[in-house]
Length: 476
Figure 1 (tube, helix red, strand yellow):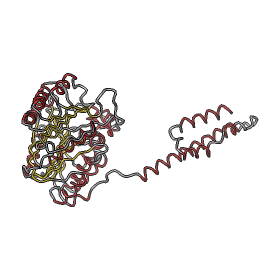
Figure 2: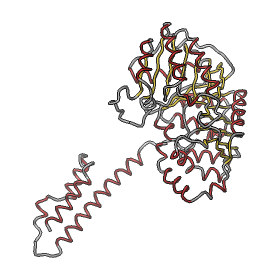
Figure 3: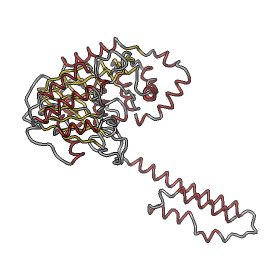
């Protein structure tokens, strides 16, 4: 009898170890678990006492578990909710004044007029444009990227940035601690000897680990003199070179911006610079008086833990909910959560045509399976899914009603919406929107459509694999 009671108590102590420090649980333990000495007062001559002791211990355990569950339910019930489906925005389209007037303040970045946007498709277009901008810098260069790997394009950027730094231009570079595992110490030394200030975001040294080890800066920004800005999905890696004409290179989209929106892009960089080294970049060299450069209405938004964590999700969902005719999404890692799926399905109910391009070639087999696990309801509702064939598809773009285009670093998944630091430019301009639709149509010609019947009837082992991988979608 004694060992049974003691073992039961040992189990209770182990199970409640993580919560017993709270005063409420101290009271519960005193109430539900009588003193140890009292348990030894049972008579050894009564054969029913061991069973009663076990039943009593189990009852107390269930009461304690119920108290913990009730407290957890209370915390869940009274906690703030994440985004609900923003159906109301469908009352006005993305080109309306009501849309930009509301979404600007909500996302912490007002839309500004007088911007010029130029889409750059694949490395053959955006690398020369970015390097030319660097070489023309007069005062400042700020550059943030996720991956920096040695190779030809790395050498080209190091040379261009170093030459400007030696000429007196203030050059600041942020690279991610996880994304730059291949970044060579020799390359860093070359850059710093030229006068470039380079910081690793999140892990300056191997022994430095962020409390949230999954948090990374996934932003891609290049701003020159506060007047010309680039963003999109590219990184410093030879995989982004060329024209996406083979499986060895990646299909990518960047955008070159001029006008007031570039100051917002600069502010996004300055935020991470401040977080990394506690120094503020300020003054006219970084934030010059804005000049109008084109016809586009534009904003640059940021998201990340502690700084507009839901901004990227809200931007995508509100824009989708505002769609009246078409939604064209092109994304490397398309893993919509339940709310995103519901928003897309609601668009289909309104008669909106939804087309989505995803990679046929993926750098993660698990990531591709996670994505497939979310396709069923969309295909059943008439959403058109297409798999890009020639190369790894890495673009992150969306065009709604042919008038609002989103280009940035964010994937359509939980990691980009909630975990990583991301940035994107939203551009409202019918002419630019038409150009983006044309780019989308060219990509469609190199895609294979996903047949809903074939998808439903895919082999059982693939369906099981997709389902199991889908359980990990919160980290994708």
